[in-house]
Image: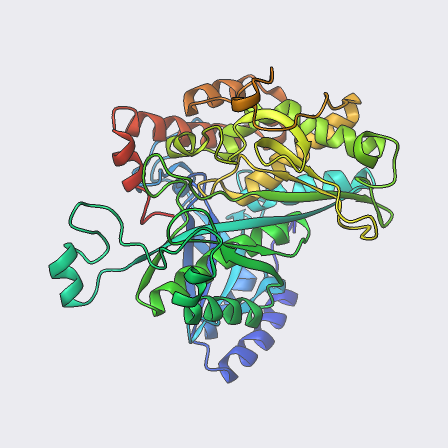
Length: 467
């Protein structure tokens, strides 16, 4: 959407508002995700939806230089108290929220006051990269995994007396809900009503869930959703997280998507699965390249692998992410690829022979502090560059390089190191554009400056209620 909606959109919005009013919907949350990876919002009454669709809703651009603790930095193009933007709801994504009675949701595109596209709009960046791929005859299908940890929320007097605020034990550890074994049915039995309500809410909102299961850490779950276009996939991950958060609150629980809940544990990822298509054919299947990849499919993945050290500043943009990215935790700490290798940052999944759509790749070095729109757009830019440069993949890696001693490089082990690699990437700087690139860099530098003297526990605890 390169021009803001006007009267036609207002007319459609009036029809949507009538439909929502009949369903007793009173408020509509308009969201975007900033450079700190925080989902920000403004809401309008249902009766104002048509006005919002025609004229937008005001919001300061300064949020693009907010940090995760709501402090602000500045950049060459964005920062300070001046200026205003308009948020335009995407009516095609308008969704009644199953876990928040009386509410609906729509992701927003951001425009300048004069109606021109805002150059630092992350959602528009993902769309620009998607359109760039389409001009080359390529279609991306993407899907994010969502991992989260459930703890008991503060509330009942007995809990507060026994555990301070109800969410922590006497020794300060989180009070996990469903602490049964990893992938164990015990955890689901203990929280069966909760997991059922998550599934029901997602289904009611049109989210196609592929699977849901307990993950490795105490109180941890994962849900995978069906692949979609890059912008839609990012929209879905925002909606999935906020739905899980709302269902958790209704059960007296707290959901955190932060990279880690405690130091030294296996944390929450936000892995991205993707496949590349042309004329209805999956380019990761049916070729003479590695494991049946076509030439463009291999080159696309090689471009991503080549750019991963710089991409990491976008996919793991908070210092806490580097406490998660440890070897032997299936977090993707090594710049390598391999078929079904969960220690490789880029895992290739050949899929069943009879399933033409089954072949895909998973990027593992991503967590929920990343903006999913920036992640999608940056990955596409890297992959397209791989095709343009005719990159090929190195030999695949099997096993855990930390155990086998395979000579493969580690990805950056700190945010400053990843930022140095991002600064050296003319590709990503050009793709993002100067206003978005510089604002993003300022936020990431600000997060490092704010936390560089903190202990791991302090870094982690500061995010438990932010993501």
